[in-house]
Amino acid sequence: MMDLKKLNDIANRMVAPGKGILAADESTGSIAKRLDSISTPNTEENRRDYREMMFSAKEAMSNYISGVILFDETIRQKAKDGTPLVEMIARTGAVPGIKLDKGPKPLPFAPGEVITEGLDGLPARVEEYVKLGAGFAKWRAVIDIGKHIPTYNCINANTMTLARYAAICQEGGLVPIVEPEVLMDGDHDIDTCMRITEWVLKEQFHQLHYAGVKLEGMILKPNMVIAGKKAARQASPEEVAEKTLIVLKRCVPAAVPGIAFLSGGQSSLDATRHLHLMNAAGPLPWRLTYSYGRALQADALKTWGGKPGNLAAGQKAFAHRARMNALATGGKWSDKAEAA
Ligand code: 5MM
View 1 (cartoon, rainbow, N blue to C red):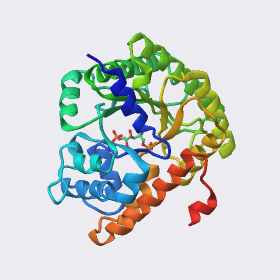
View 2: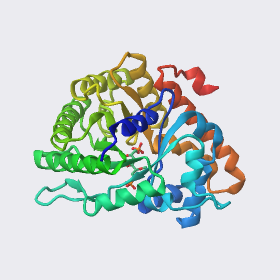
View 3: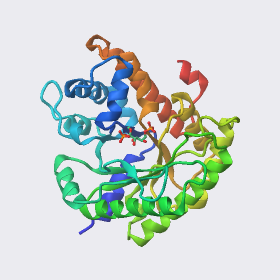
View 4: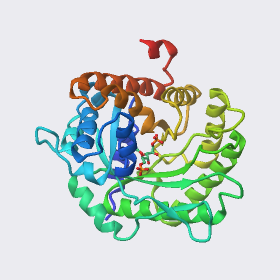
């Protein structure tokens, strides 16, 4: 039977003040691109060493990271000294989590659109990951903006699938992170992103309701409302913060313990600044924090560069980025803190 109190406790830990989530769940193909950027071969050992560099960064992990999203390979891996990586994470006080989706696949009769797969056999997988030490899970749906897209077919299929995943997680004892990502690729303006994000989130919460998902036991991981990367006019940070908050207040019930943003291709600095501006505009009905992948890891990856001798420097870069985002969760980030 579902234990909502337990789920709510985990969800609250994941969005604890001054902390946020490290998204380190790149599938083998995505991590290949990251390692390739530092000319490091994509071997199981290198993937492990890279993740171990971050998970063993004591200052960053114990002070600023509330949870870590892992890929299937990583949740089963052991550190160099034989300690399971899950245990290494749990010792810092962070909650280990697992990516459950099997990635986006073409959506039939919907050119340019995708549907995230992975529902088949999910209850048994949830059971196994709980045994492996996971406290929460993540599933990402991808909504692209372009000529004539997204369609209702795509939004309906993806939000319904996310809701079914979330219900299975809650029944099996994992807190679901629900991530319907509206991509920032393309040349659309910020108002188009605002309109589509509002549509997606409205649909998402309808579907969660129909699936019986208990909002107190989940975390939302949305995109920010932002202009497409190739848009002629890029919105100011203040406009991004303002429009994101308008949409979230319209769509996300206060029963949701927290919202943890994805960075989606923003620079590390932009992702921090936007989060800071939103939290500085509080009080808000829910905790607002980070669940960044690229925006938390980019500096650490570059500084580490795949060289064992750079371990401490990589960890320091990771700690700095994490601390800046931690400050942003309290609306206390500044250029001065950034430079320190
Ligand atoms: C860490 O990257 C995740 C994507 O992995 P795959 O595409 O390989 O499955 C991604 O879902 C991530 O958790 C979120 O999108 C947040 O990452 P960003 O980099 O957008 O903050």
